[in-house]
Amino acid sequence: MKRKALLASAILALVTVALPLFAQPVVSEKKDVAIFALGYYGFAIPLEGLGNIDSEIQKVFVDLGRFNIIGVTQRLSSGGLDQFIATLKKAKEANFVMPDKYQFGEAIMTEAEFNKLLGAFIVAAPVVSSFNSFYDQKKGQFETDIKTNVTFIDVSAGGTTIGIAQIETTGTDKSNQAKSIGNAVNAIPMQLQFEIRKVPAFTLNTRVLTVSGSEIKLQLGQNMGIRLGDEYAVIIGGTVEGFKDESEQGLVIIKNVGAEVSTGQVLYSSARLTKDIQLREVPRLGLDFEPFLHIVSGKKLDVVVDPKGDTGSNTILGFRVPLSRGFFGFRPFVAVELPLNGIRQIFTVSIIPINVLLGGEFRLHLGRLSVTPYGGVGASYIYVSEAITGTDYQTEYVPHIGAQAFVNLSYLVTRDMSIFADVGFEYWASLNTNLYTSYGGLGVGGGVSFKL
View 1 (cartoon, rainbow, N blue to C red):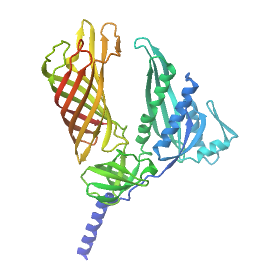
View 2: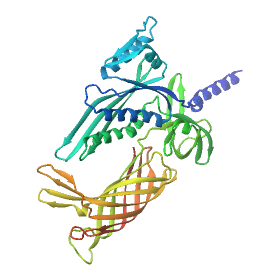
View 3: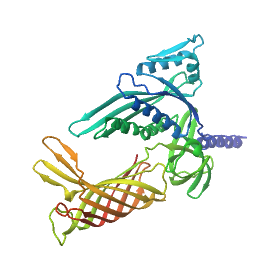
View 4: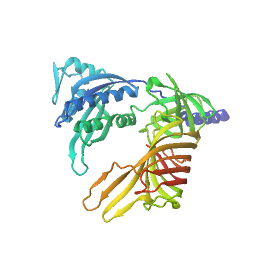
């Protein structure tokens, strides 16, 4: 009997330890969300700009694919939002008397409109916290800065605030203020999507369906707004006596999206992946930021005309920004380069050539290791800065056109960062040899890549 009791105790202890590893996975479902129109009281926002902001915010929620949307035409100010939350809390009380109409700051709702919001799971209230549109004499352009806070309120929890998305966007235009406002508005969607996906209540959870080598099938697809290039963390654990006991043990990238099932490639995992392992979305802005240093040997960049051409090395600092969300394998990128050989100082004036390239890459994922051939074409411009007056401007003069082709070898050090080495060829042809010579040749270099 004593041996049986010891065996039973051992089995119970094993189950207690192992249970968090095999907890029932959570799979996200669509949430009902009511979205107020943008509150802007106290700011002189043009009506056309205001309408664009409303439509862009609504479109963000539609594009995310994880919400059932209820539109609300009323606009809340900051004070009205506080009153609205307080009323939601009172509405849950047994002795709450329903008025014929509600007033929250400048916004007025009927009883039917308020009851409609009570039926929603989440209420989203966007309010402009700062709006500034002006003409910058020094830069010679219109500039618009908009700060918007989107407050998410859990109605079912009695008006609890579950998250606040803070968005700051800027737009510019040299001749038209309305266009600068439009450019600031157009910058809202990408950042707002990212901020919404960061709110824990909206971050997608799913599970592994099948495993085949380094590929998995996971539940959810287009029906919940999953996109190519999205990343999901492998979550091991569950709850212990009501407390969360979870840890990230791996990373999966989405390579194919179906209607209800997606395919992911495992980049790394310290846990053995099996059916029903929990996966959780890793919210990303959708860009990689890759600063680098290249040494390009061959023809040397110079301002001295030499028909024979000087040979030597060119030191080039720069960064690449591949688009990561919505792409797998092939990804477009933009790159900016600063050839240090071309910087010229004349008294207090700095003359700086800057290269801008557009191109594409094809990333072959081999676990933590990836091999990426990439290439692009571009042109340069001259940036001028004067130290005493602080004046700086971008000229319209194009001194070079060029192209590059490299192979990138990258290693994923952490979930969010990798290191890489580049080898390839780059050449920039001068369009006016009276100013700069052509330059380029074989190049090697390296850098660090950050997932944003």
